[in-house]
Amino acid sequence: MDNASPKTDKNTETDGPDNAAWAFGAPALLVFLWSTGFVGAKWGLPYAEPFTFVAIRFAIAAALLSVFAIAAGAVWPRTWAELRQTIIVGILLHGIYLTAVFVAIHQGAPAWTASLLTGIHPPLTALLAGPFLKERVTGRQWVGFMMGLCGVSLVVWQGDQALAIPPLGLAVLGFGLLALSTGTLYQKRHGGSQDLRSGQAIQQMAALAVVLPCALLFETGDVQWTGDFIFALAWLTGPLSIGMFSLLYIMIRRGAASKVVGLYFLVPPVVAIETYFLFGESMTGQQLVGMVLAAAGVALVTWTRR
Image 1 (tube, helix red, strand yellow):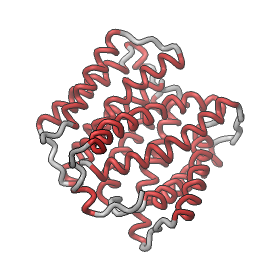
Image 2 (cartoon, rainbow, N blue to C red):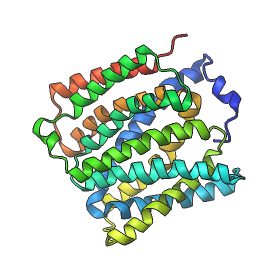
Image 3 (cartoon, rainbow, N blue to C red):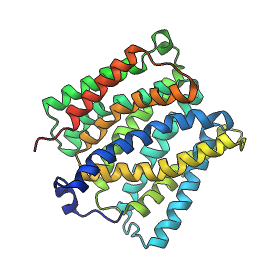
Image 4 (cartoon, helix red, strand yellow):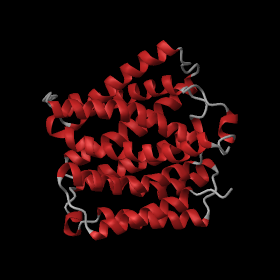
């Protein structure tokens, strides 16, 4: 997890077993980890208010990452410009996006609605990637984006239930969507030389600085330290806040941002499967068709001609 040099981004298309394992394993792991974030939020929110929940999560992750970065001798930002860029990414991806998901679910938005935010994320990011990163999005990729979006809609659309989203929850999800897309692009543009160990520690601190005042001002701070809450907190803090975002940043460095976010089309279908087994929510034939369509869309977005 050391600094990525410019050469790293150019030498990621080599053939071989290691590259093949990375090409399949990294996207599959990212989709799985990302999907469990929505399940973990639903699992733990009955025991803590949203701002309080994420504040505890960010505080623990910041402490763990800081200790690890110091022990490993990680390089910390040397200039204000480097520090500012890291703080901005932390506020966008952690402080705003992750908190928005928790607030929306707490306000009554179903987990599948929150996962739809992730499904809309790829087309928006692709639209912004052109002027922001000078990336060229091909016609094939646009077809894949549209297929993926249609597949996501089939998975999450639940008839009349789709209209039962509280206005505040819908507005929060929209704000989180914008933060997710801009944060991804900003990380791609400015985070290539950043040490992921120290950088993520700073990002968690920045997110905590944004969320903690909201928890103190608008919430009671009451937490029920049940086994379910501790499990949800541990999972969301370790494998997700630390592991998942490390994997995401590495994948962004190794590939175009528009291709990486295309994988997010698979998140809502996976959430549907997880909620079926964990919460007894049934899957319909419509959802199964949507899963296949979303997978086909991801294939078109991420496929690279050799």
